[in-house]
Length: 188
Image (cartoon, rainbow, N blue to C red; front, top):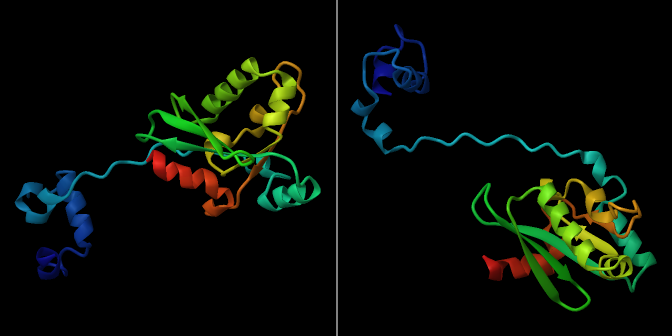
């Protein structure tokens, strides 16, 4: 900062630009000559952006969920979410059954929609079609990329029959599936 102030007529750049020049070795000064630079950690670059097709939420919003529940008041609702361990590592897919306060957790290799599909395919292989439809008539989840393909959850891959309905909570509204979220505190 002092160098920038002292030579601002000859060097009309910001102090951040000077740091960048030093980092790229454009200037002869060394970064380690600066006291504060040594204390700073290198910033991690963000991973690839996960694109979610927002059209998958058409007819599946929380307002649609409330309307559906008003029309079918006795229907079972299952809240699903994931608890991520280390970023990019293994995670838990949790299924909370509102009607009996039961929460199940399944270990996933990654936190993505393909792993969520594998869990539901495994459930379909263990349960009959009627059992699956009875246990999972309505599924409420967040808008994460791991739930971006609702047809993988709703539809039986062998018959193509819709067995359940997936709805999405509003953004930044964890209280809309509060039971599931509250239990995640115990897991963490």
